[in-house]
Length: 153
Length: 153
Image 1 (cartoon, helix red, strand yellow):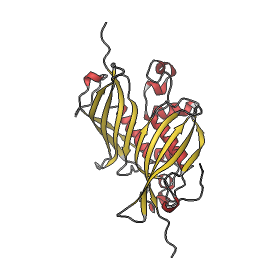
Image 2 (tube, rainbow over the protein chains, first blue to last red):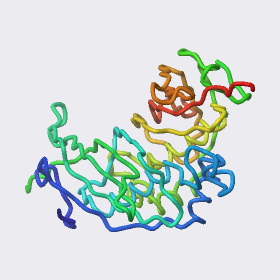
Image 3 (cartoon, each protein chain N blue to C red):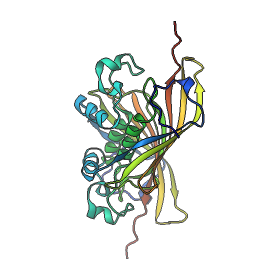
Image 4 (cartoon, chains in turn green, brown):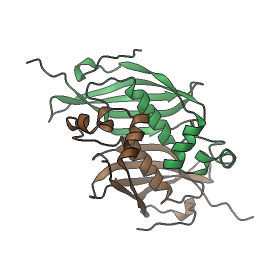
């Protein structure tokens, strides 16, 4: 496990590298605000209405869990050119609840140098977003574009 | 193409059913606000800094495009128990820009009745989020839980 801070280039990364993020607490007000804007469904908006749904109580939009996960990635995976995702596969095994504190554990699972653009590659990482009870609220596999370190002239 | 409004149950859906959403315009202020909160990277925050990146100018976070897509789904796919996603695969072929007007076109591509819970099923739909130039800003395949219509006693 590591939490690297220097900007990372393609050559700095190896399959199996692991990263762990700081934590992020989602307050109820922020949960409701996000849901009102982007996912206005009863189980994301109202304690009472959420009780008799599949969520068994108020739950954050999965897209807010995904957005918080992104925030934690930006604080954890310090890729030199920024984290530019091109493809992402998400699952939400457990809902995120008001007041949950989330963190991310990520591991690089594949690295491919581009055939057409040899100064860059595609790095695939697998990431688990966990709550304070170590339950997985999001399981994500993401492909990002990472540059090689520019040659010194 | 249709834009159904009655609550939909599993039995109401057929592979090949198509849906088209209303539109949603993303203003620059809202783009910057989302990025500040969830994806604070230069190409999502600053016109000048974004110029020399892979985005060639200010671009919305992909997670904001995903969140807007969710909003449009809630206005389009009126599933009786709400849209509860369990698995989602996303690609972002084109960035979303400040001022873009997005809409969604979705098609049901698979329906599986649950073996263990015969009152529900998993519906898979493929969705394209397009901008005002008909460019695809997000290509998504999503699995949602849909209930069968309750039997009348």
